[in-house]
Image (cartoon, rainbow, N blue to C red; front, side, top):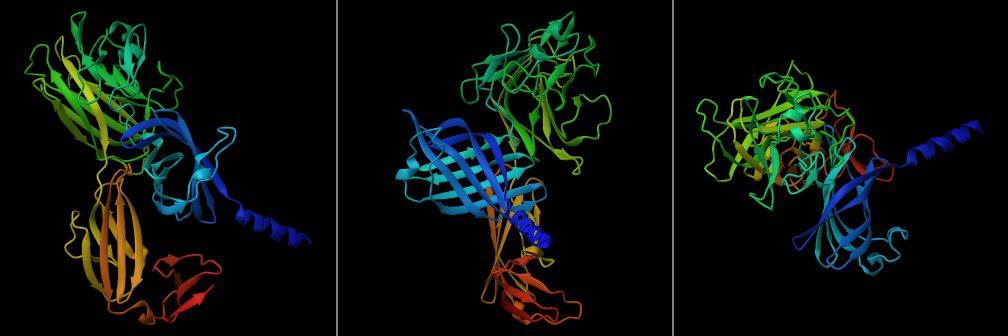
Length: 499
């Protein structure tokens, strides 16, 4: 009897589903119009497969909210690439009614099954992605709003009151919210400008002269500490520390989460010096990706929590024109997991070396994610004449292979690659989809492989290991009952079996 209950317990354990609710901001795009709201997206994992549900989905229109319902995609095969889990699907979905406590009526009751496409990425406890829903018109839902993948308030359109009557852009900070004995004496260096590259606002950094020395206009995603009257003292710095609980005037922390590995950072700027200074002519931007523990810029020691650094300290006077500046990231330690980014801009690349009235306008910040492959091998053999901009290839092999035998070298550490291998007469068709780190871009590579010795005629070998493959050529470590597989036996013979 004890054994019986033990078996029942083990059976129940195997079918328990693990569900995670993600409370995320979402952007809904319909005919170019964008609305924003918060939503709960639930990802449930059961026996190696996943489902994703967008709960209580509301379509915000000009007239009133339109309750749509729950959009659920099922039987998703997760793809893992390092610490990233990718969920992809293209399904016909029956939308179901949402919570009656949220709305007594849901549009789901009037909808036929609708086409839904999904591309989502999970890193740690963060979910980002896109859902395209067609209910007679195309609806695009951006999940997570780039949280953990992009800088916040990139267009500098949203502002909050910092201290007194001073304002700071949401997600960015200057001396007004700084720490240190000199912060209150540093003066006012940040304001909202209606001279914008796009939208209606930009951030204006302005240097001032205080007690005979110049204080550069400075803005950071972290927090400024001004502790010394000496401009070159490293106790004057920007810093982040995700363990701190302090918040700014908008209720946001003094750090920006980042859970990916971008290739570069870009801004649109206008820069002019109050008095031209040939010895110190440049404004600057720096960005440092860390593991979220304490870090300051400029550094006061050697830090071991740095993932990557980017800097452009040669931003010259732009002649009253908007100019795009870019700084590529140099990755220093791939063993450190990215969790935060510290971005700092200043009216001069050298502390206290500018002039009174230096002005730097900043708009449209962006983390850039490259996409594509730079090399591709199948079963150790390079795909002939591979080029990242060419997407169609043919090659020949003398042995069978699976998706596990494909080596894809990406153009960026953030690229996620989805591999699909289909067996066909005389060989295989390999489709590799490379997604940029923010899932906004994708490149599809197709390799048609002719195999002179198919899986049915693999040469026997004394060391040959028994293995199971799905019908599309993927190796299966744990075959499931009731499924058909190709079984490569120890003697090299391949047979089709029903488990």
